[in-house]
Length: 99
Image (cartoon, rainbow, N blue to C red):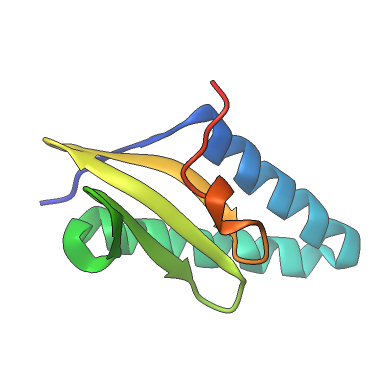
């Protein structure tokens, strides 16, 4: 059984910013990022305990080929994506969200 996925506003903005950045390098690279992000999201949707625990019930899962982590938490039957976090950012910002 897969969980419903809800992206926080910050996670949606993170993904949008990453796609825009990769599009400036190469449009196919931006599409590859979105594909890999989608694959990682499907994995955590199907295997919510597959990510490493970060703090409390918050988990993270890497996006293949790209330096990003999906930071998420499971609430009952909902997978809430907190961030799509670039691994070169200050790790203290990983759990912070705007809005």
